[in-house]
Length: 424
Image (cartoon, rainbow, N blue to C red):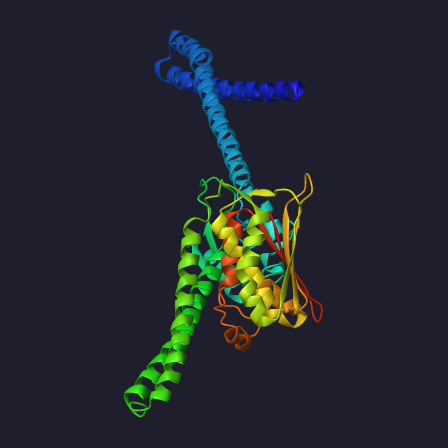
């Protein structure tokens, strides 16, 4: 490096000497012209000495100023290049820290950078490969091409079906970089709105299901009232029978409204964990005693298996009673063929407390198990309505257990029975 610097300095001095000798030649020619004009050697000598003085004093300073200006311009360029490189590195570092998928594309839609979230969502794309190697949606690729050709930001909704259904709002925009950058590049970002779409679908399904559940008993009530006002006006036996059916339908609506109100209250307190201590042994005994009349009607025996000592958990007593009443009542109704419902309370030191409600009924098909806690979801609509179910019981159980920081585990085999386990 020192040798190269020395050679550069020598070349600069040689260029300066060439400029000086050219100046000397020019001044000598002027002196010759003056001699031809004035015929005085003194004038020529004076001009010659003035030229030499100007060359020795003025020319080096001019050359020095030019060299300094050139060095300043080169320094500015190097400084700007350093700033550009630092800015690009900063952009990459910032995008790498985001939890949303982001790509940096060049002007040919080639991948220059992919953050970790994009790699998790779409897989690793080699640098330089075209974005269509992984994202093959025609609408998305059209938007990318349009932005690259026009320089205007665009966005589009994009769906991924595998490995699970996801919906993204995809936005592509040119990066705002300094004019000294070699080539433009573009930021392709993905915002996951799958949960919003799922919530919207659940909300619409909930409104439709609630309206349907209320429409049926209301239609029955209206029909019976019209019949009693008309053809059955003077028929006491028909009126008595119709009034009994109307009472059942009104009770059904009352249960549905009560369950909806319970869900609403639970959602308001979902983030507030209970801080009371509840002993599960007497609580389960109370649940069994309260359901003995129902079990007697269904010819089902409820057997309780609990330890001899207290087993306490953090919880709200009334809500836990609601949970286990719901689970035991469902086991009695839908596992009626097994004739026995077993309730186990398991406790071991340094292990979670578990309560299992086990029936020996027909079981639940595997495809229905993941959806049992959805609102208004029923394995069999006719069977549920015949047993006066609202389709909201397990949804209430799930919300209560979520507030209690507990889990509901469902195991079922066709022809063997079903096991609902609450793990605290």
